[in-house]
Image 1 (tube, rainbow, N blue to C red):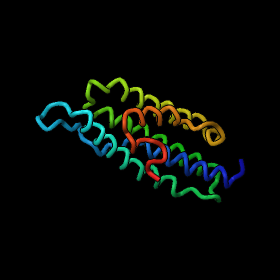
Image 2: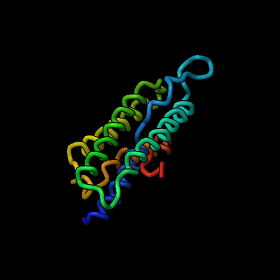
Image 3: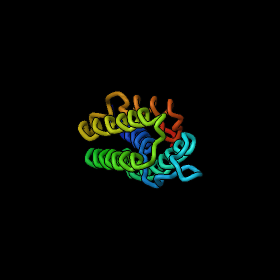
Length: 153
């Protein structure tokens, strides 16, 4: 992969991280009667969190260009992965309806698996398969459309 292609992949990967970056802008929101949120309310909270996370990750990726050094690229990848990991932690603080708790947990674990690959692989992750394939499938199945890769672009 040449330098320009690798920078394009970084931009796409940062967008993917942004899409799954679950920024802690949500609250542990309750349903209208003070109880646990409904599934629809939870999805709205999670999608809003993802939308906000997209913006942060996009900013990280914006500093990368075809002239960026390998060190700068790896730094941006690590910043984006670490941001996504912090945000996964934040979404775990939401009250998750029991009926989807297992699936949400599996989705968040998939995000953490993807970010671990990025943190361990450095620049090499750019020439491999998309680490977010599994997380995207889980987000889609949950109806977390703002949490799928590319939803923030």
